[in-house]
Length: 233
Image (tube, rainbow, N blue to C red; front, side, top):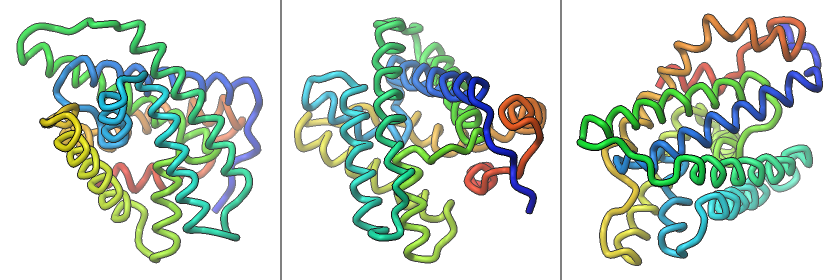
């Protein structure tokens, strides 16, 4: 399979920054919709409610645990370049806090309004993930953990992702009931997001993939395996 040329500095930086902005904005809309955050955000969000601290701080902390787990699972197979996940996690955490501050308590009234906000969240998250994965630098920590487990157990990425997502949500639910005495941040929107995001990414791929690859690499390269598998979910 033909490999994409090495990434070109500024376009990649712009694409990565845009990806974080859209993903973080999607997180903020999901939180304000009050219909449930995505599986990826569910654990940091519940912990932020328990600790009464900023969501971005908890994102950085939880993602740090995911990186440690990758090291423990892969041991000598862990590549040092993947430590840059720490940098990207920190940046994303700050982006999350900024977008949450930007939206503040904005919310649309009625259940229909909540659904509109959830749709906006799904579209922006899907677009952000699409941009980030097309640049193909390093995986974000939760995807990196999924890749590490898939590599060790010899299972397809998308099968392991379902298990990891469900485990993360289950832990979030458990912590929510134990410490918050009720279910917080995990609702029907969590399930809808898990099912739909990969499909929405597929809608962006056909018209935008050549443009992003051309800007970042100067040519259209192979599609990242994780993108294909997420679209098939």
